[in-house]
Length: 422
Ligand code: HEM
Image 1: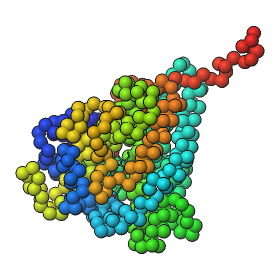
Image 2 (image 1 turned 180 degrees about the vertical axis):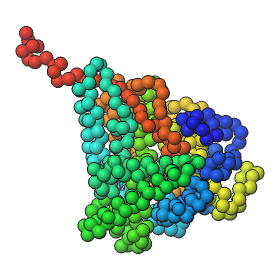
Image 3 (image 1 turned 90 degrees about the horizontal axis):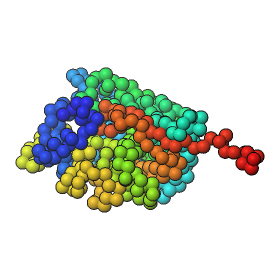
Image 4 (image 1 turned 135 degrees about the vertical axis):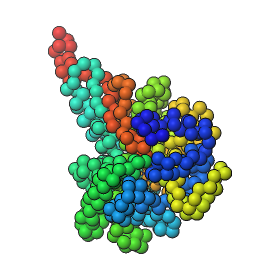
């Protein structure tokens, strides 16, 4: 199952799995795992406390013999993240982190997000003016989808935008490990080095931030530490790393995958351009149609029987979010993109106690981004038909997305008053 074709386009494999049944044992995934494909099953497992999120050690183990010892720092840091702890520790951490993600706090962020979007598009247009011909080409991933979420989460955490290249590189190393169904020790080692570097980056910022608290997310976590919501510095640093990582490895792929899907379905794209008020519904459909996070994982705390199969305590279970979002039992004609679709929630942000804390932020950011792209880049279209996908099975991500748009008339083309009346 795990081959180049699957990583480029997992949907034919999901269709085949749906046709075969709802639960499959697959020996390739992380050394052996149960794959769940149905919408109802995935939602049920994600809210079932018998399925634990504690799996940082399992990953380390899956990269080969002896890996667990070698990767103990990776395991130590991530096993404190709210993504990888169960209740009651999870409930406490989640409460400590929600304030900065409440709609009222996020609305205050909208003008800053708009400024970042405007600057990125200014740069795209500035290059365009110096180009030749009617159309100008640019790489949507490099120039827009990749930097935007990284700049937004950096601003929220109160860290310097100039450090972006470094933390994006660290994150990409971590994502390469988490997103590999068959990780090598080499990939795992690189992820550990980068996670340690990220953790140290935040540790060095701490004394200064503790001295002068602001309204950023890191200051909010420090306040939670004082109030008892966060119990140790190590726990605090793990949440900083989680936010930095989760804040941009995902949103960039909604922008990239979403833009590609729209430009491959021109009627839908034209409908959205004509009626930008469809954006909230379009974003939900884009999240469903091509999930930025294709799957997550759970470890069984006890034996569980499902669909007449017994899954044993300790087994790894993979809820395939990307497949659940295309479940024909839930969505009619699930492989069709329909920005007006109104058939209930997608599962792209997960479900249950660990449902994405950044969902509202993502909608806000993506809506500002897409609205501005529609307004400022006329006649946007794809350049070439072959897109290159990263080899990451979890974070479905385009390496590049070359686009073209109609070049705005350069200032020199505007006739002078004299020329106009000559
Ligand atoms: C398109 C954008 C995004 C997608 C598709 C996405 C997807 C997800 C999913 C599927 C989960 C649940 C994982 C599980 O149950 O195992 C999750 C959790 C989480 N996400 Fe997101 N996410 C996105 C954006 C963000 C952003 C922008 C942030 C932060 C700034 C963020 C922070 C988190 C955190 C901290 C959790 C852990 C929540 C918990 O365990 O209680 N995410 N996300």
